[in-house]
Length: 297
Image (cartoon, rainbow, N blue to C red; front, side):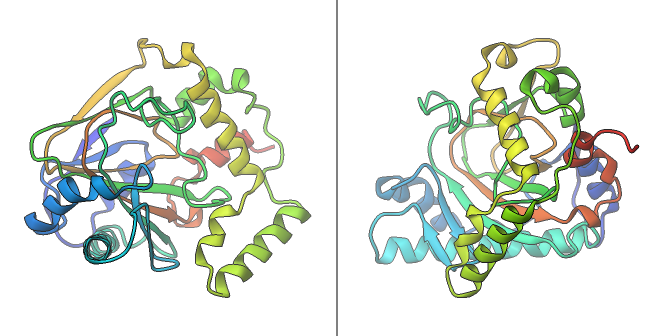
């Protein structure tokens, strides 16, 4: 399920193809210039004392930093670090995957400062339980969720687990989860009106309003997400279970709506989220929305 990618500039169609097949694209050395060591040290050592949420996130649609207490020097420094890192990641992805990133939406650039193992969060909030991402950046309406991760812990691997791709998990658990059966996943009148109003609010200066948007597809994906996390038998280690280790300063990217995953352990990671247009994909039949719809006819 993992594809190792070496260095290389310019378009890399093999990376987009691997993502759409449901593979984790792994970079043994992060291909993006990382923040200076002093900035990383600030994120690892100073920032945890000022947390007000489990992650610290820069929202480009509003220009705001969420998850840090108070104002002042630390907040400004963290904002500068995340803004610059997000810009470098975007530039790398546009250069290597120009077709797949056409018309995309850049979501948050986040720092995850807390050890994933043993956090004691509720099942729906826990990263330790295997799931597909749903509602990662408001409504997607079937567009794809891409995340780019960097392990910036100098001493510890970040460990993931997976139980396969969406098609594999859906075939085995879709009926039990109540998400099989096809049917329309298009927006009705109320969803269209809600989306229109939220986009208007966003344009008026409250950019994060779009995060409250929803759609039939996104609600169905959220139901599947919750079933996976709420079902102990699904979380059991069976023949489909795998663990993957990401060493210090490595990077990886994956369509997290398509590849089931959990963060078993690890501390200090940079995470960038993007919404890719389904129309930009070369293998749309592999997208969750089209699997949920069922075969044509």
